[in-house]
Length: 263
Picture 1: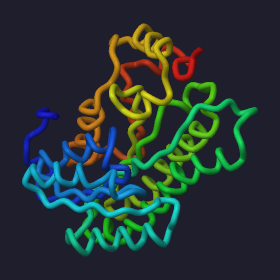
Picture 2: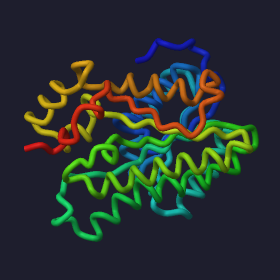
Picture 3: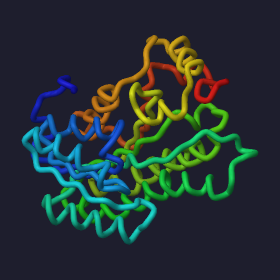
Picture 4: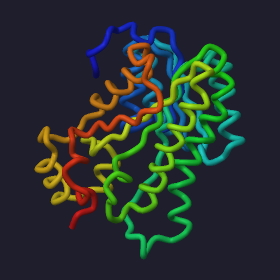
C-alpha cells in the first residue's frame, strides 16, 4: 500500500466509499485507513464488503460495511444516515460503484444502456445528494471515479462512456454549487488497472499488449496509483483543487482510442 504521504494525512476523518469492497475502491479504502481515516464501505451485496471491512479494522480504524443499491435513492438515504450515525460524521465521499460490459451500440439493449447509466451516473447523484447534509456540517470532499472511455470514443462502450461523461459533468456542476459550502468535488479517470475485475472482463491478451505498447510509461496502472491520487485530491494538500477530473493512466489516453475491446 501507499507510503507516499504522512500516515496522519486523514487522521480521524470519516470516508464513505461506494463499491469499496473490491477493486480500485477497495485499494482506496485500505489506503485511507493506513492514513488514519475511519471508513464505511457499501455495495449492493454485503458479501463483497465483509472481508474488506475486516482488513480495515486490522489497520486500527473504525470500519463499517452496509449493503445498498446506489440506484435506489431511498436505500441510499438510509445507508448514508446509518454511516453518519455510527461513525459520527462524513468528511469524504468516494463514488466508485460502477457496472460495465462490452457491447457494440447496434447490439446494446435499452435496458443494458439504462442499467449502466443508472449505476454509474444516477448512483453518483443519489449518494452525493444524500451525503450533502453531512458534508456541509463541517465541509468536506467528494471524489467521483470516472474513466477515460468518453475521451476516446471507445468501441463497445457507448453505455459506459455516456455514463462517465455524465459523471464528469456532474463533478463540475457540483464543484460550482457546493464550493461555497466548503465542499470540494473532483474526479479521477483511471486507465487500465492491473488485477481489477474491469481489466479481466473488458480486455483480452491482444488489447492488453496494445495498452502496454501504447502507454508512454510502458505499464499498466496499479490500485496504489489510484489510491495515491485519491489521497491527494481528498486531503488538505489539494485544498484549492475543485471541479477537476484527473486522468491517471500513464498518458495512455493521449495515444489511442482503440485499446479496450480491440480484436
